[in-house]
Amino acid sequence: MRVVMAAACPYPTTQGTQVAIRGLTRAMVERGHEVHVVAYHFGEDLPSVGEILHRTPPLSGYRKLRAGPAWSKPVLDGLLLATLLRVVRRVRPDLIHAHNYEAPLAAYAVRVITGVPVLYNSHNLMQDELHRYFERPWARAIARGGARLLDGSVPRAADRVVVLSEAAVEAHVARGVRRDRIDVLPPGIHPDEFPDEPSPQGAPTVLYMGNPDAYQDLPILFEAFARVAEAQPDARLRFVSSADLGPTRAVAVRCGVPADRAEFLTEPRWDRVRALAQAAHVAAIPRTVCRGFPIKLLNGMALGLPTVACRGGGPLIEDGVTGLLVDDGDVAGFAEALSSLLADPARAHRMGKQARSSVLASETWAHRAPDLERIWGDVAAIAACTG
Image (cartoon, rainbow, N blue to C red; front, side, top):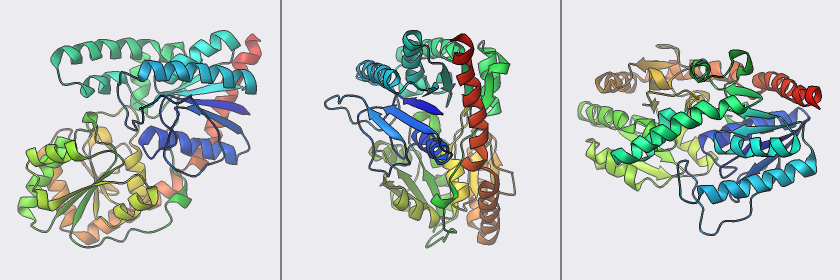
């Protein structure tokens, strides 16, 4: 099949949604499909996975890697729409596979002109995240209203919807999407990107790898680690992200994390992130609401790390087997879970080994690809029936 992947973001990057897009693109290219990716005018220096990449015209001064609202977004998305239309007209794809919120809006406009059907890939719900990019109450109120509008309209306009978790199915059904038009397809991994067993080194270390946006509920982790640091003088916190972490460090200090017990590392290269992660002892995911799927959880488990997570952010974790789950927002419980694994390296190693084995056995793109092929075929058939 010939498919155009539409993504209103920089690509490729080492951030969650872009990692998922790149992973599924690689899987489908390896199965013989032709995949065109239409994205913003820049990305990180990562090797091609066989996609045909089409960038929007450059917008001077815009190089923001992190998600979230920006004044430049309407211009960027207008350029995305124009580029997407040009590519669709030229390559005549079987369908447009559009991710998140702005890309499907562009894809729907292109569908009106060209008749190419649209598969909407939902990675999140705006009601869970959008308001958390703002601090002022009036701005948050406006963002909540905008989120309700987007959540209630964008998925319903698609020819078919793919979500990452069962929790997202119910949320979309509640907003008017027919259940028989929704497929669940969690993200996967490529095992060759995780070749080595973990090798914890140095002081007992808690790892967080990923973006530092507000919806990640990082104060839970920071307040919990402050308690761990009091009880275990040698414990360390390692925070790794491709983002600027100056503001995040300040939040950690306000939450009681001793400055000399934590390192905040801006590192976009996956090979370096992988090495930093494999030298840690326990991964942490404090997020409490996630209707998508945390890529950092897949990565941490594939790297052989036991993960402590709030229940809302740990959909893959088998409690007590591959990690530990605590109630959402329970700082004391989070601290206790971290402390228990740092204090018992043998138990942590067993959990990490089981986590790695579980993910490498069943949570791979090789397992996901046949299901995505079926979904693509169903969407492409819509055009055949109506054309």
